[in-house]
Length: 162
Image 1: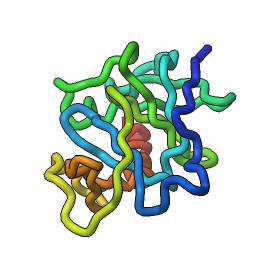
Image 2: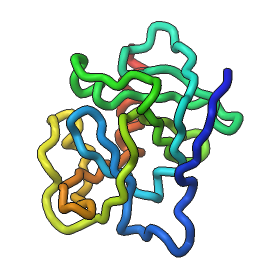
Image 3: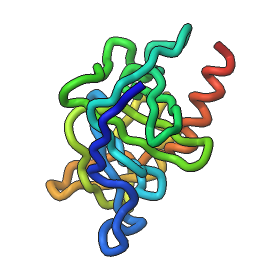
Image 4: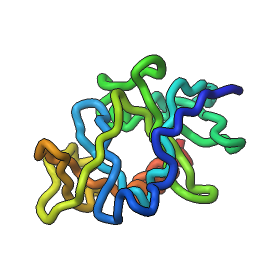
């Protein structure tokens, strides 16, 4: 299994993003922000291995720095008609620590966002329970800050029932 890693960022440099900043990614029509405390790496041109009998939103497994991690399609999980295909223009945001590392596929490039007080933008009910706040980018676009560890735990529970 091979992959080409393009580390747009690894961990935030000491002088760069603070705890108030996050990576914003577009998953389908939803603008989602993942805190730098979770988001660790960005990968392009990733090769995925199929996971037998997995739901469509578990895109596959990838070898990232010697560890095999699951790669999820959050857009397809929320709406089976949506979906992000692996290939040119797609990226995987890798986050977590230890045995709780996973990837989220998305299109385009990540956006630096800053958390703000307020209510996150509207999300589908399945995702709204994981929204932990709001963020904005440099243009003022609203983003929902997502509790990625809680979301991954929910996915793990859902997969264990399958």
